[in-house]
Image 1 (tube, rainbow, N blue to C red):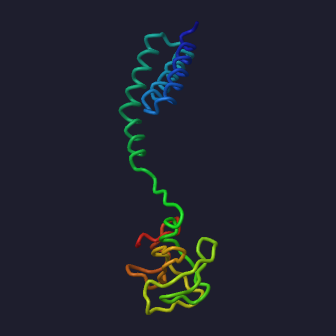
Image 2: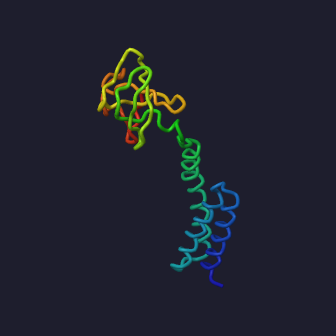
Image 3: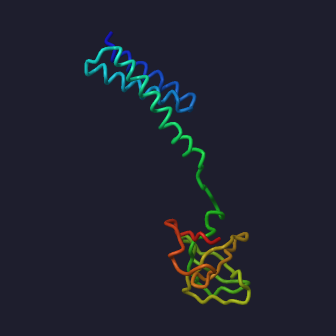
Length: 163
């Protein structure tokens, strides 16, 4: 059996073992075994294949694994339900005051009230959702938000970073 085929079998075994452990160590070693198999396919001696396997394993563990671990440690901001609506932009459908009103938020019509009870927001005004209180969006006019105005304060998900 040629050495390159043995390396492919080792890579397959390590790949399956990685799926069971999810440590990324065995996956990096499987990749290193594929490097060694490639060296075997091009006709390099077994000693060079072993050195290639060792070098690729060490490089993966030193450079790639820390990057993977750092990405996993960051986590993902996975707000869902009403929490995902906070910070989004909406359009006033019916005037909004401190007690009632209607807005269009994420394609749906919501009851709304203004966080500033003395303010009345006219229809057509763009507002930002600062809180969800039950089934009511608590909003504030976008152009009068503290700390700036307009869409320049939003990220690509149409969420302002202010609240």
